[in-house]
Image (cartoon, rainbow, N blue to C red):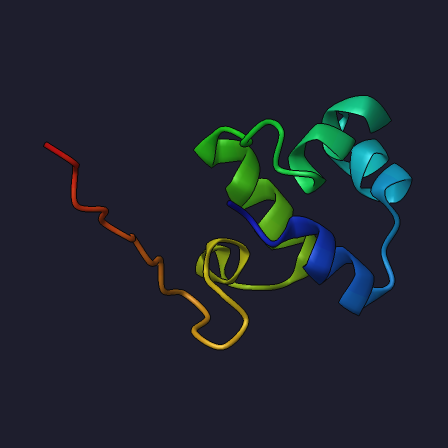
Amino acid sequence: MNRIKEVLDAKGISQTELANRLGKTFNMINLYTTNRVQPPIHVLYQIAEILDIDVRELLGSPDKPGGLSIQLCKSEK
């Protein structure tokens, strides 16, 4: 899961503007912002540069920027 939409909203940047700056379609950016498709790592770095944030902030939770959390589930027998 990424936080692209959250950061775009906080910075007042539209998905259309991000699409234009990346040379991507609005539809692709929308897929990224709704977490239906995860952008390749090089695109994440480009987005972070455009948004002037550390790439880890796009992946972390708001209360733990830069931290990924993994929840393990006990399998049923």
